[in-house]
Image 1 (cartoon, helix red, strand yellow):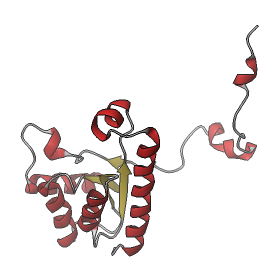
Image 2 (cartoon, one colour; image 1 turned 60 degrees about the horizontal axis):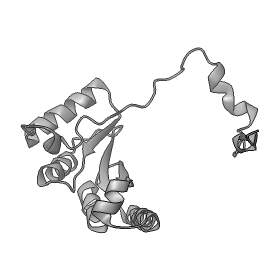
Image 3 (cartoon, helix red, strand yellow; image 1 turned 30 degrees about the horizontal axis):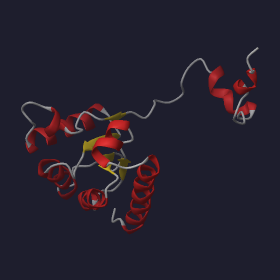
Image 4 (cartoon, helix red, strand yellow; image 1 turned 45 degrees about the vertical axis):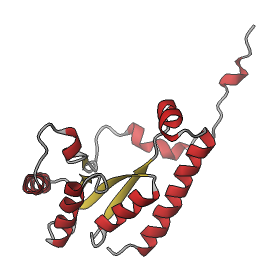
Length: 167
């Protein structure tokens, strides 16, 4: 007979009072939605949006009511960088809106991203590290531990730069 002990819970369940939300039959406030429609716009579209089109689209998202808007990957291209700088320098980000940006866990890309968000009232820095076998073996040529170290070093740099951040 098979050993069923491997199916025992390997975690500590949350206290009972943490499940109050399950018993609700309605929400009491609107959820926070983050638009990602502007992410990598210049890389994903056959005919990329111009700076003016990106600004118009951002303003539409604000009018619709989004309070979190991912404005792209500012280190990926000059257009992405200039778009974010224009939003900040022309004071186009409302006080109640948070911009979000995407960056890889690579030192120079993280630093460029922080240059781009400098002066934004609020910003979420979404950083990531590719972990797929193909990326690990063919692109990075690193072990799992070395890939984890890239993520750790990236997190340390983001923490350091966020403490120096103006905005």
